[in-house]
Length: 256
Image 1 (spheres, rainbow, N blue to C red):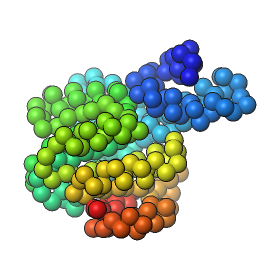
Image 2 (cartoon, helix red, strand yellow; image 1 turned 90 degrees about the vertical axis):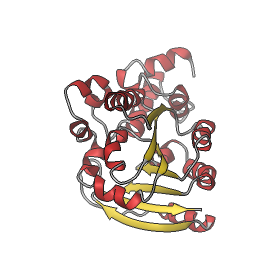
Image 3 (cartoon, rainbow, N blue to C red; image 1 turned 90 degrees about the horizontal axis):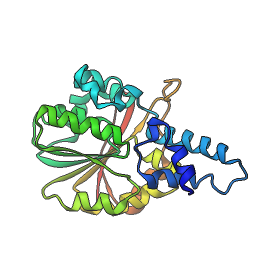
Image 4 (cartoon, one colour; image 1 turned 120 degrees about the horizontal axis):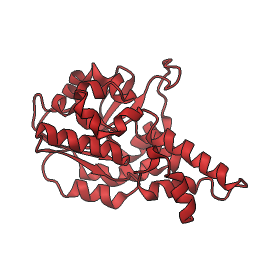
């Protein structure tokens, strides 16, 4: 990608702090099409918005919001965490059953729910997120609340070396969250989710994947049919430990 094209894409504030490799990966989807450069840039921005910013509000892209709003109020401004908000205690009681290290991949601003995670157990938390502004928000929150066991990491989920290093460097029971993430990964690179899971499943004690059960735009419910995912779990002979729906999400808990 030419430097001028990259700089034009990220000139909009919402895209200014994304990993360069992610911007390049999405631009490559349109690079060889018979389109003008401006159209390629527009399509790239549209895809970046769908993959990284579909669930968020511009208000949470500034850490200074913590000076005006509580963490609960901020959670209600991000679509995914707003939908999850009233169910956090119930969800986490099902997913966190012992002291552990939690890797929240594609976290968004989910790190602000850390107090709900630690109601019954000690949880060392790593929120890995590509959108730099969300990472800064989580970092500022952890610092403000003096949470010494909670960390925000800026990183692309397409950077496998980084993800594997983060997981391998920790000891103890390991849990991975991939909340509403797999569909976005597949939009960018078909079958990448399988590649990611094959690498991380052997390293952790259990993983939790979630899928939306309502349309983002119309909010109408729909049946969650991810046959490719269910078939993949079966093919890999991984154990499904639990599966349930709460709020607008279906959660699947599994292990190697």
